Image (cartoon, rainbow, N blue to C red; front, side):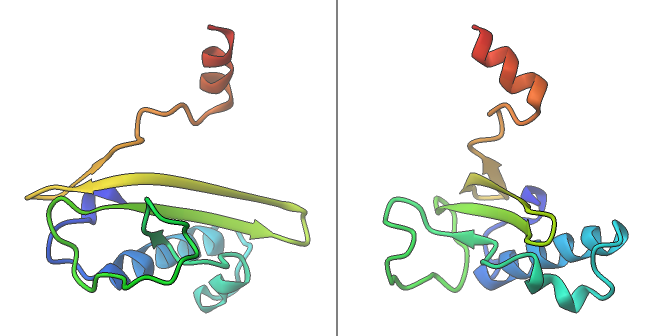
Length: 118
C-alpha cells in the first residue's frame, strides 16, 4: 500500500485503493461473491488524520502533499464469524513517496510475544 502513496495523489484514492485491495482479497478467500460488497466487511474509510480526535469534523485535504502525516487504516469485520481486525499505520509523505512510520512495530504473534518477553 505504501508504495503507491505519493505527493499529488488524491486522498480519496488512498481510501479507494485500500477498499479495492481488501475486496479483492476477500473475494479470493471466498468471503465476497462480488467486490462491490466490500462495505459489508469494511465499515470505515481507509485513511484518516492523526493528532486530533479521529471523529472531529475537519477539512480533509483533497491532494496529498510532502510532509503530510496521516493514518492508513485497514480493518475488516466479519460479524457472522465474530471476528475482526484493524491495522493502522502512520505514514509520512515525502517528496517522492511515502514512509511507513510504524512499519517496525511487531505484527505477528511470534514477534509480539518476543517483545513481551524482553
